[in-house]
Image (tube, rainbow, N blue to C red):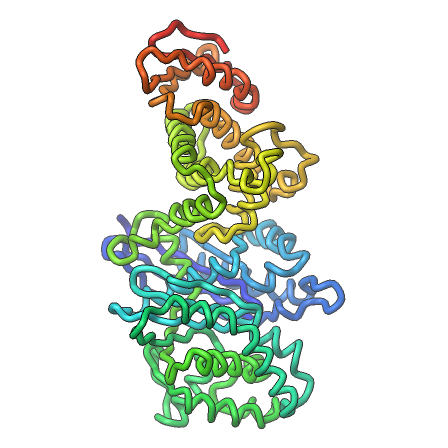
Length: 532
């Protein structure tokens, strides 16, 4: 395979970061060839409406245009982009993402806090040797802090908590220098917010395991820079692997807290915008280390952006070896959520097999959907009956809400919306404009995807009508001359006429015929062709 150049953009609460890498799929590995960063402060939202402000949006669009132009100037063939905390929480966040796509041609995926944490783990794992030791990773952003317990095989615990340097500065800091009373309240608040994820980390550590702490993000790198200049007289390049003791961090935080904004500006290593928020960010780090009883932290310069690259490579089968397990993250989490909602997994898997089989047989004949869409169809097939956990009545609608709000790792917010919609339309009404979630999908192409994949899912559900594996295989034959699709059903037991399945296909086929403009006919292999 040829080398590829890929850019990854992270639209955060405080800054927009981009990394451009050259991927060598034969190794597989990537080399960073350029970085770009700009402090845009998306987190400075309107205090009355919580919306992203026009000024922050304008700053972000300017930065993203520069990022795009730099990526293309370096021959990037792909730009992948995600938005996190500030965009997630803003009422106009999705409108902002649509504006980016419309004006700049960059498609931005909105990701959950847990998915952000998973990709941070992938980024750190790509840049550090974990050996067999558990690692606690902390990433302090502008709007949230991710705490992760992981080893070389998998993340054992992922969390995203709404404490970030920008958020805390806006909510708690009114004095300059910060007063003792405000600092005390700030520390108490951070401690309270981190209590639950810290407790969960302790629960997931085994007896006698001694974790190593890894820190990523601008806050931690700034503290490391201050420390290195004081201790060594110079800053190591790269900072990756630089270690700082908790005692030294306590001394640095104590000094910074007593300084005014202007005094912090004079400290070598602190940028203008970082000087405003360094104290709240440093308090998060220090309280986390105290609560976790860890005496030192090691810097890792790889984080979310690099994790996006790793995830992109995994999705394309470029990475195996120790990261192979991570490539199965979507499937494993779909099955985990299915178990949580007491889904009949054997039934779900049979429906999924039929759905995927029909999808594959009709590819390039009736549709041009690809691997990503097939993955969504499989996931929707597994989870389509999850709503029964709430109530059998209207369970397709309950399935939508359960899937949409489940912590499904590996999926973007848009993919979760598509997945939930596909599952929701496995029965009853077909998608309509008056259905708000369907109507709110950002493009007509996504609406088409929901209609066509849910139409396939309906047929797959019909083929498993008796929930006993009555049909072993389905063979699809498409006749272009008269636009007829023939289903030949192979029963599991010789002599089974599969009458109930044929009847259910006749009931479920209408939406499929309408979407694909075909006539559906079916027969059981030992019977004459039956017109539905």
